[in-house]
Image 1 (spheres, rainbow, N blue to C red):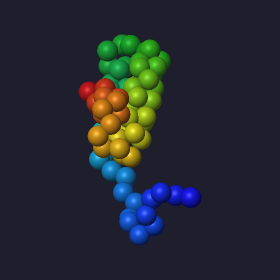
Image 2 (tube, rainbow, N blue to C red; image 1 turned 120 degrees about the vertical axis):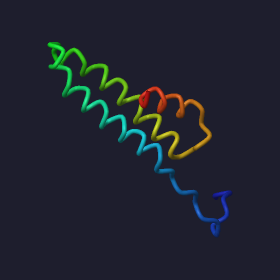
Image 3 (cartoon, rainbow, N blue to C red; image 1 turned 180 degrees about the vertical axis):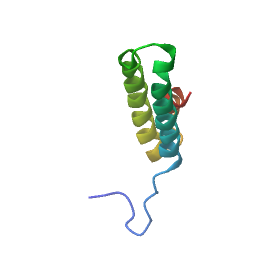
Image 4 (cartoon, one colour; image 1 turned 45 degrees about the vertical axis):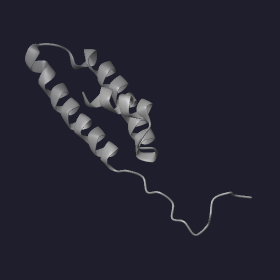
Length: 81
Protein backbone atom coordinates (compact mmCIF):
# COMPACT_ATOMS: atom_id res chain seq x y z
CA UNK A 1 0.00 0.00 0.00
CA UNK A 2 1.35 3.41 -0.94
CA UNK A 3 1.71 6.15 1.65
CA UNK A 4 1.53 8.93 -0.97
CA UNK A 5 -1.81 10.65 -1.45
CA UNK A 6 -3.30 9.90 -4.84
CA UNK A 7 -4.75 13.37 -5.42
CA UNK A 8 -1.44 15.27 -5.21
CA UNK A 9 0.39 15.86 -8.48
CA UNK A 10 3.80 14.30 -8.88
CA UNK A 11 6.69 16.76 -9.05
CA UNK A 12 7.92 17.45 -12.57
CA UNK A 13 11.50 16.77 -13.48
CA UNK A 14 13.64 19.85 -14.02
CA UNK A 15 14.82 20.54 -17.55
CA UNK A 16 17.68 22.96 -16.91
CA UNK A 17 20.22 20.20 -16.04
CA UNK A 18 19.71 18.72 -19.50
CA UNK A 19 20.25 22.16 -21.03
CA UNK A 20 23.57 22.38 -19.15
CA UNK A 21 24.51 18.98 -20.53
CA UNK A 22 23.57 20.18 -24.01
CA UNK A 23 25.95 23.12 -23.59
CA UNK A 24 28.69 20.67 -22.63
CA UNK A 25 28.00 18.54 -25.70
CA UNK A 26 28.14 21.59 -27.98
CA UNK A 27 31.38 22.93 -26.47
CA UNK A 28 33.09 19.54 -26.39
CA UNK A 29 32.13 18.85 -30.01
CA UNK A 30 33.55 22.20 -31.05
CA UNK A 31 36.69 21.46 -29.04
CA UNK A 32 37.12 18.06 -30.69
CA UNK A 33 36.78 19.65 -34.11
CA UNK A 34 39.54 22.13 -33.24
CA UNK A 35 42.01 19.55 -31.87
CA UNK A 36 43.61 18.85 -35.28
CA UNK A 37 44.49 22.55 -35.54
CA UNK A 38 47.04 21.90 -32.75
CA UNK A 39 48.45 18.87 -34.62
CA UNK A 40 47.17 16.49 -31.95
CA UNK A 41 45.22 13.28 -32.53
CA UNK A 42 41.51 13.35 -31.69
CA UNK A 43 41.82 9.86 -30.20
CA UNK A 44 43.85 11.30 -27.32
CA UNK A 45 41.00 13.63 -26.32
CA UNK A 46 38.03 11.29 -26.75
CA UNK A 47 38.49 9.46 -23.39
CA UNK A 48 38.32 12.78 -21.53
CA UNK A 49 35.17 13.80 -23.35
CA UNK A 50 33.55 10.43 -22.67
CA UNK A 51 34.48 10.54 -18.98
CA UNK A 52 33.10 14.03 -18.45
CA UNK A 53 30.03 13.14 -20.53
CA UNK A 54 29.31 10.29 -18.10
CA UNK A 55 29.70 12.67 -15.14
CA UNK A 56 27.31 15.08 -16.83
CA UNK A 57 24.67 12.49 -17.68
CA UNK A 58 24.61 11.07 -14.15
CA UNK A 59 24.60 14.57 -12.64
CA UNK A 60 21.79 15.75 -14.93
CA UNK A 61 19.75 12.67 -14.15
CA UNK A 62 20.14 13.15 -10.41
CA UNK A 63 19.54 16.92 -10.41
CA UNK A 64 16.54 16.70 -12.72
CA UNK A 65 14.84 14.48 -10.13
CA UNK A 66 16.11 16.13 -6.93
CA UNK A 67 17.16 19.75 -7.37
CA UNK A 68 18.81 19.95 -3.94
CA UNK A 69 21.13 16.97 -4.37
CA UNK A 70 24.68 18.31 -3.93
CA UNK A 71 26.44 15.31 -5.45
CA UNK A 72 24.39 15.60 -8.62
CA UNK A 73 25.14 19.33 -8.78
CA UNK A 74 28.87 18.65 -8.39
CA UNK A 75 28.83 16.05 -11.16
CA UNK A 76 26.92 18.35 -13.48
CA UNK A 77 29.17 21.28 -12.63
CA UNK A 78 32.29 19.21 -13.27
CA UNK A 79 31.05 18.37 -16.76
CA UNK A 80 29.92 21.91 -17.50
CA UNK A 81 33.16 23.53 -16.37
